[in-house]
Image (cartoon, rainbow, N blue to C red; front, top):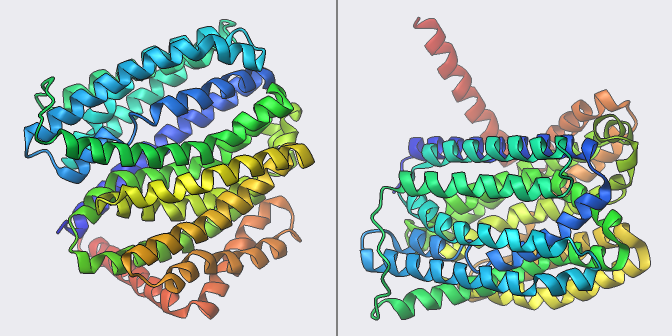
Length: 478
């Protein structure tokens, strides 16, 4: 078992790394929003849709297998490493091959060059994910955090520097390429593992089986997370996609932190638990995550007021306000579902993730098209909240609980209860000026937890008292 102190320390470094990444990404978006046009964001948003598709064959595949299987047997590690490199090269050729056709389809000739530049990053990422998987299994979270910091600084400096020099949408390409070079070099150095190009015939089938299930799951996730951008770009134009893409970046910043914690810390932690502890441990994670995530999403909604958007990004970005509520609902459920995703991968059951994600994908695609046709970017955001928020969550937990013999009702209540508590708090908070809304939201939410979830409130109170007593004793001992 992993010690509580180790978990706390690891969580700190993962949170720090992801927080730093999101802060630098926000600063980059803030500067670029001032220097570039919404159409520039839209063009790059289209390119990122295809980049995300091809990376699903490398991201969370070989690295996730190493986290699940361990690094004790070099046959598994080397086979996963070699397969990842071969797939990366194949995907780089693939994205280069389709680049001209994508440019023709979207009537944006510049997409050809952008996607070909992304092909170089695909090869680097295929190696980087394996190195990072080894470091995660070794729980080298502090070093991973330092690498993330180096990547973020590199991307910020290169992206904004290129934008100041007038490279418009090419600024994103330049920043990404520089960041991936730094990431690949540093992860390879700190992994401290001697990789060999080797495909062992004995373990190949096991690696490929896990690999294919993970790719299938990732394909479903890709469809659910990216085809809304694809639909907006094709049906509503690059400017609308620019608005939608910036709103998505702002609302997903928080979920990125939690997802990173679950993937990097949750997988190795869950993998080391006894089978009989899985359901109880996961339920605790879901309950605590939901209680803290609901008010944070509500705070983001209250803070991103039209006046704030105008002050920070400029008046031209005001349309992002219309899509933020729906995307925040999706963000909440995405965070909650991340713990289930990590648990299933840690149990060697990525096939369950694959089944659910692939079944939801076609429903999501049709829904995006209907939403865009009827309501523009607002319609798409509403569909995202309903289909990928509520619907996807209920179905994923239903399938998982049925397969594993867990209590569906218990998990569903844990997912949804905090939402029902925070909605009235948001409504009440709107009666105050902007500066006082967050305070009123927190106060009313804490009161709601005290009344309707007294067991959790008492637990937090006890822990807070313990921390306070510890700090007081430490202060008095000096």
